[in-house]
Length: 80
Length: 554
Image (spheres, rainbow over the protein chains, first blue to last red):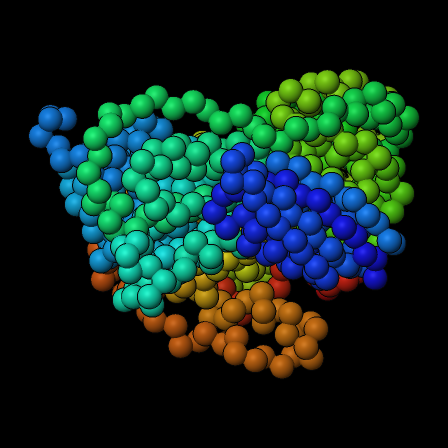
């Protein structure tokens, strides 16, 4: 399985973290680690997600990007 | 009049619905949505009481698909909300703009396992494009405007707004504000027009693969102009039917599991697939690795996530089809390929020759199609009758053929037809259904009765769950597990109980007169068409098989 690290920027809206977790599971990625924090001044959240899967990471990046409250998704590490 | 109104969250909801042009909603009241129903009492928005929330959701879907407007449905908390879920899932799979409003227990009771409390907000994550829970009355207008914008922008879809009872009751002081359209947040990469044009020019055997996105993008004219100028052989998905001009000499019909032989062979032989608003669904591709094995791919879509999802695109054209299709509309020199495809079309025409007295469903549906008034809207349920309708009926616009494509939801046809008829009161609406599917939302006959909705129902009755029975015969050595429905109710008596005129036919010689009587009848009508239970849908590409390995009628 390939391992990836994603850096996700979100608007701090209702259930945004749940949405990301749901999409990640449904699209076939296992979560090895997560850190999440919110800047309470700007209401922007930063989520770092460690995932693994046999599937190409682009599939997950595209699907997370489709969520309404997502500002940005980057693959910061790829240990394929 | 405004001064007499008590302004609450509930009444504000209707003011905002009207701002968005909503005239009709479908729903079912209950405890946690009573303040909204109380506000409805004074509203100009017309409410259609369905007899199950799933019926309300499908009517909203049918309304949206037939009219291009947003469909709106209401349900109460708990079971009312969960009953909407199948309809929302259906709308998500087929990208249909629906706004669902659910009542929720009061904010003070939320999270306490209160009576009729369910976390519908949590449940909505997997079956909506987006969802909201309103916990502050001041947020309500913004949330509702966003809900409509999200339902319509980009790839369309269902949005759920969960409104707790105290928010519905809360006093509203501010007057109604103008709303601005939400900008499409998705930044699309520039269209790869140059390389797409080069691929198109090099192709000797191109095929146009047309999906439901064409109708959703309101790009039927642009698609037809492209097909005509290029003279390119075309095939359609189930949801794309109606987009290509059915009279186009290069149109080969539906592709995929129950597609025409000509369409599937052309796709398997082509050297370029021009995919427009389609997503390589498994029912289309058969064995993915062997789908269109020699083809390069130009993929037009509004959804970035569909590009390279199941098949790599050699050129991706992301964005609005209405803008992008004309950019690629060029004449092609593919005479030999055109002729080959036209010849396949001629060689593999449908055979309506069917010996014996028993009624042949494909011939009935073709006759309904030939006799129905122009611009009629047909809905289907799911199963054999659905595939026969797709194969043997002809549509001049995707909004005239409403079928549950992605989700394949039995029970869709009747409530969707109700919604379609309400959105298009002057058009003939025909629900083609099967005896299995019909019973799944049969309670909606009551909605037809109440509002005297003149939907025509063509019930193809084989006393079986026909498609499952077909697969049991073909792939499970004839073990007919739980597919016998021979103890169905008397459908004519059932319809009559709802004041719906009905007739049963069992022989070929009754078909023409019965169809004419149904179409001419001023009001709802049920035509029960008994067919041989052993009839199969042909051709059939078996699961995990290449599309040129189809099974055919022996």
